[in-house]
Length: 56
Image (tube, rainbow, N blue to C red; front, side, top):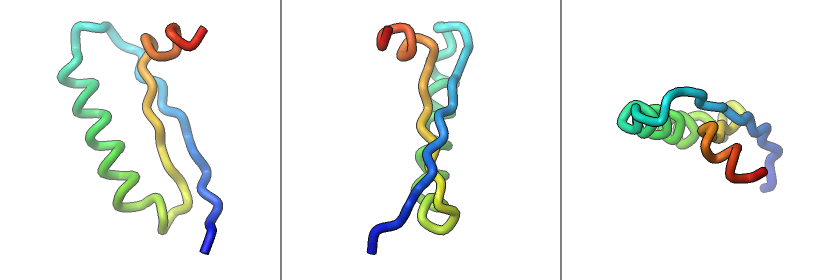
């Protein structure tokens, strides 16, 4: 059955030289979404400042 999910955008604003830490944040958010998005009705999407600048 269809369900409404609220999606939150999480902007990761940090220096570009900490790629390992950014990957860790993405992994944790992905795990959160897999475990809790259905029960809580929310989902989190990460975006780095570089991704935001590319969209402009």
